[in-house]
Image (tube, rainbow, N blue to C red; front, side, top):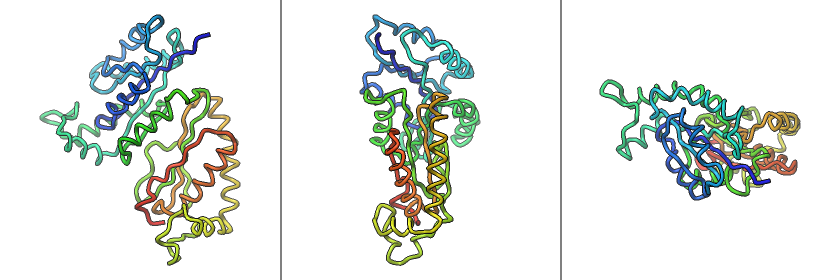
Length: 295
């Protein structure tokens, strides 16, 4: 039996990197289509049934669709309940970024936000777009926060999630350490606060090190609270992950936060990633604020 084709419906905030993501999908031999009305999705996808050569299809649909954009959620629901022949149910990929970063990108590229008018400023346009996309983001299968991602970082994530080696039947887990002072990751599904653990920042010889060093790791792990925390954290994810798999979730981001993302969260995230890897889950670890955080 021929393998079913992947179908990715990509949406999200204007300026969040959809064009760059589309280029990466093309590198992965997806046929990419940009900016079509949601109502045209079923017929467009149907066009790529065999003998069409495209193995997989990625389609960008966003607020440029104007008055037709509200049709996207019911169309996605329809495609999930009744997939097009030879295609898997669609994966909805949502790209996001902070307001400040979006403003910066529009200023740097000198491009116009699609919702800006004579009466509506860039910040007002971004706020309006967020409200229009709120329900769609809530129903997305995967959210990527590009605020702090370099171009290669976004390309790497797309390759990991949708590349030929990626099994669509398994759960891809990202364990992200972060600092609350720099903001909670926008794409986090589960957030754990470890600021109650002993802070290496207040130990002079450890202050300039980070959680990847053996000295800091030993310090955090020797805290009497760390062992019971890890046991409960491991128990929780061990119980929860099969439930996510049963519901068909393909991607999960677990965020571990401390004050600045430099010490405690790095250690705990590393230990959690090791546990998940030993449990045969597909996992990657990212220390978002390692270079700039206070522990």
